[in-house]
Length: 134
Image (cartoon, rainbow, N blue to C red; front, side):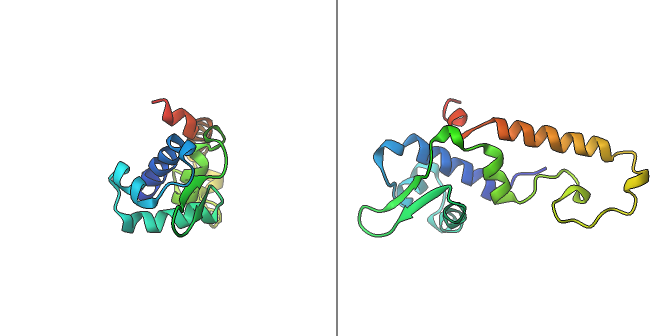
């Protein structure tokens, strides 16, 4: 599993918004500057987070973005599945994939399933609040 730039940046944005939650709505430009992420890239990431109701945004003067809930209630796995899609280690375990014709005799499928479970359990056990402490 390789986490893309989009997934890594989404996590950085969420941590940044959590760290500045007491300031209300945070301008995209401020997040971009603090996180050294281009505005153009943020313009692609933030709508994904808004659409999933992880953050909310307000346009105009005094506008910006803020979290919709407390940092401790955002599992990293939720954010990565949103930005990365499935976190399956092999194609045959991706959601919506066609059943593999060789699954009955596959010697590795149980290992892949266990790996997928370990990855998801770990990422769902780490929250944005945990990332703020590291």
